[in-house]
Image 1 (tube, rainbow, N blue to C red):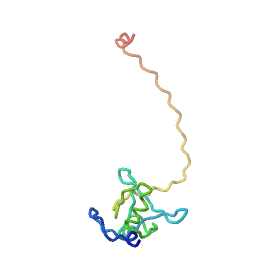
Image 2: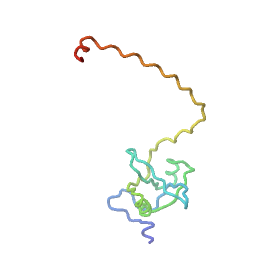
Image 3: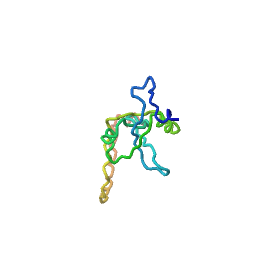
Image 4: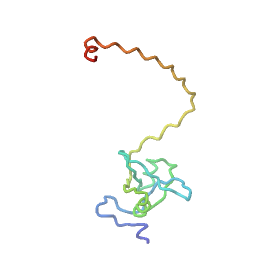
Amino acid sequence: MADALYGDDPEPAEPFPAGRLCVPVRPGTCGCVTRLFRTPVGGRTAVAFTDPERLKAVLGADQPWIRLAEPALRALLEPLDVRELTIDPLLTAPAPATARATEPQPVPPAQPRPAPRPLPRALTLLAS
């Protein structure tokens, strides 16, 4: 059981050592829920960091997180059909701007369409 939680042996193809990672979470109905993100091409991915400072630098100091071993994180993601795990991402999209309360702008009146131009005489003869 301890091996499943801490998994210190990396897979041969993995460039990062397995071990405990800092995983961003959000509050859920029954506790913490792992946050999922999108890759630049739109695929779903989990994100984890090897150091709490890296997590804070990318997601902000107020981002809640928990420590999980990579195998435990992958086991949590498997029922969600999320196969990709991004470790220590550097780039993120900017946070969305807060919506300001503004007065609705009036809609300009619709402009009447100009009358269609008559076809040239040669085209009129061909169309008949």
